[in-house]
Image (tube, rainbow, N blue to C red):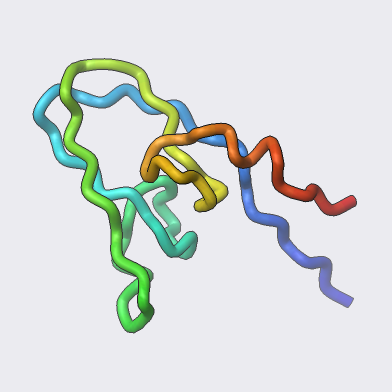
Length: 83
C-alpha cells in the first residue's frame, strides 16, 4: 500500500534581484518550486510573473491558496492539516 504524499504548504524564502522577472508556479506540479518549469502545459493553469521592485527577501507561496499570488499571505496557516 502506498502512502499519500502531502504537498508542502509553508512558504519558501527567496532573495530576489531588482528588475528581474520570476515566474511562479500556479499549478503545483513544477519540480522547481516555487518557480515554473512548464509542467502546467495542457492545463488551465499558467505561471504568474513577478518582477522584483528591489533587492529583497520575499516569501513565495507554496500552498497555492494565497490571495496575493505569488507571495505568501499566511493562508497556509488556516488550511486543514491531515494527520
